[in-house]
Length: 403
Image (cartoon, rainbow, N blue to C red):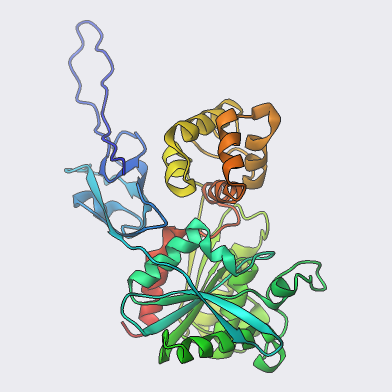
């Protein structure tokens, strides 16, 4: 894991000028940061060099950590106080965790299905969180780096994490809207086969000895999966839910709801009203005395290091892709995305902006393009699940358990 030391270069002095003390920049052990001078009021993005497949981010350490907006997130923003920083240094604290996914067949109300799951070292688990994939997805979406890292964080803290496919996904049969997704219309257990499948999967895990009978249950997901997670937790009487970019179903939440945390983005072109919908539903829950939180996420700079760590590119390919994106105006000189996420990913792959090593990298494993596109979505604050908020979700779930 590469640790970057950030070095400040002072501009040459003009003849006869007094030597000025330049503003320092942030030094990061186990990570990297923008080279923004640490003048009062400056905002500086900082990232940990984390392998999302095998490492759980725990916290930033150092005197400067108190000035971070999210000191327990691998990507955070530091705001320099009015009196500056005495010690402009941060250290990333992480835990190593190797977990193998397991699978179990179970009988649902209409057909045989499969649940894939991760378990903590000491079982059976006393907390269980179901991951609900997005539209067109399947249970294997759990293996994407961001979803996997969020699951890994929960497992590290004693949770089992499970994933099943929606009924439409297993059948590969679109609903009336022409899309393959979770059943978001039926608001009772008797009428909703997807909710029945979640219960059947939970029962199978209990009978297999993976999960304790009295385990606290949660659900989390993205988009349609996030909205479904909030609905399922409400109908099934579970402890809580977390939704990325899915606002929730107002007609259901007005009648019943579980504690819910929403993470919504400012540039969600898939659902442009998701942020407003989440805030409206939060108000409904709060009025009923039910815990609810909304986190609004904006764009952030794309760094080549992110492509290395989150996509698995080697440094040479990542540097070339990053330079190509700058040269073609996909990102500006500060790394900020200038076009919508899916457009940016398409343009980088297009012939007119082709970068040969990037195409070789993609050809080695065609699924890599999904990881690349997801990272572009995240920095552009588009439609994505992001592991940045893993510890916030854990804290929210733990609060519902009374911990």
